[in-house]
Image (cartoon, rainbow, N blue to C red; front, side, top):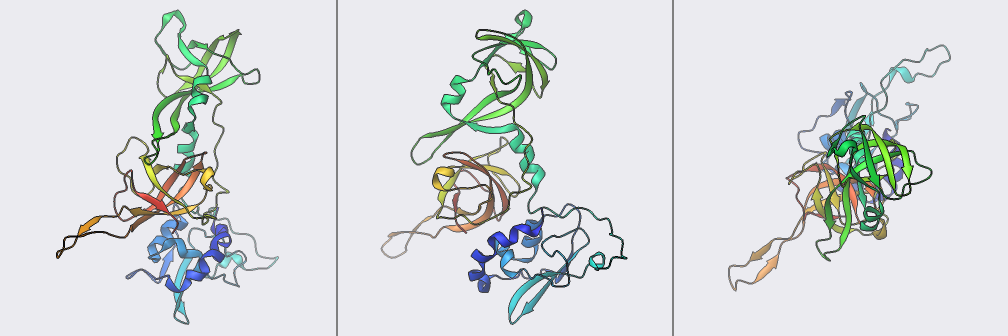
Length: 336
């Protein structure tokens, strides 16, 4: 994935082009390195990195300017007083049937795809009804309390006739809406995988194929997570107004920064889609005036940006792309 996502958001950002500013002290040129992401490069140059598409210049001499590769040179310039970002000439883009194609590393990603894919491979949100209906582990054979890889164990519940392999999941904390108190879903983590070796009515025997930690009584069987790819996830502005908050920082942390995963209390019922770019804003502060000591609220202050990576009915997961301070539960999420 490279800069092909730019076309999807450029039109919505062009109206803001005049307000896009270059960071003070940023370089006029930058050579792309393996491991860079588009967001990190944009953040290097711009005070508003999400506005990168609005100042991108499609070099006419380059066959595909929407892809950025390691060793490309990013150039910053001003045209008619407006900032412009472009790619320097690529020697390997010369068009001639006699020129042999030069091998190069793949185009850089828009965001750190591996972090997102690794998280989504093991973390899901499930409704209470789904967890109650899911088959559960009774224990290992010979009354073993814990089960490891290659061990057999008993499961109680109705198994699917079509599935032979299952994911083994452990339920974590519940996600609760801070405004309504509603349970939006339960966090479940895949801790292993198992295959069915015997089944009789609602009692089955399975063999653990793999286990990240010991499988124990009460763990649930759900459809195993297939390989997750975010290759076709293109950052875009939401189609409607979004206003919500972060309800949890993932991976057992209390605070989050750039490239950390968070949960938010808005999902597809509110129009959220994977790939949506949202702003992070600190909550209003209550201020007391000197004279009559009246109370006024400060404006919501932008402290970062995030990308939605997985959407459920009433909540979503997102990855923080940029943060000027530590992000916590309660941080407001809304349109940039």
